[in-house]
Length: 164
Ligand code: PNS
Image 1: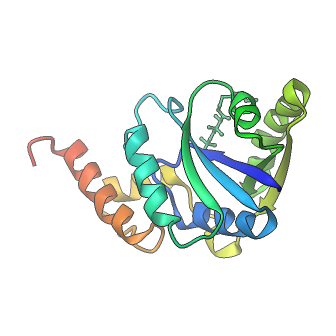
Image 2 (image 1 turned 135 degrees about the horizontal axis):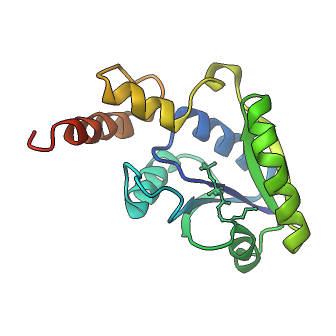
Image 3 (image 1 turned 120 degrees about the vertical axis):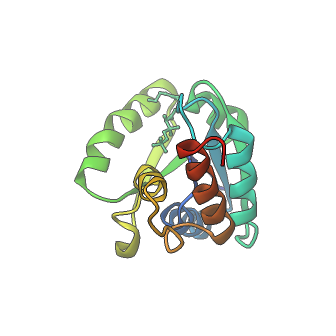
């Protein structure tokens, strides 16, 4: 049985993430979407909230489950019995960022990384850009699963106006 880990911070999960996860699920028997518990100090969503959002967003994708991880990603892969990491690449800068991590992870553990080119329609979408647009009152509905979009806008408004 082939099993892959699709890791990230997912703060919040975007439609671009979902595209990569769905395509990974077509390549492997099982895909574990691994949510980094402590990846961002000032995260918009708590780790368990990100897991809940992903679980709902991936509910219709066969062979996908969502888990939280802390510490080294390769240790999570080992404990989960996964020999492959899947990452999406949007543009060259993503590759420059990802390649050293892929090489480090393989050196540490033998776990290899497979890169999937993002779908062109999501190539400019990132969680950080979506957070910024939402914070400034822009419409982010096209970039996020429906329930995630509503909650992202609400959270960003609360950050701007804590008494709202
Ligand atoms: O969505 P992101 O922010 O690109 O996700 C980054 C993540 C969580 C995949 C990365 O930070 C990670 O793998 N963190 C775990 C810690 C670790 O294993 N560090 C060594 C990497 S070589």
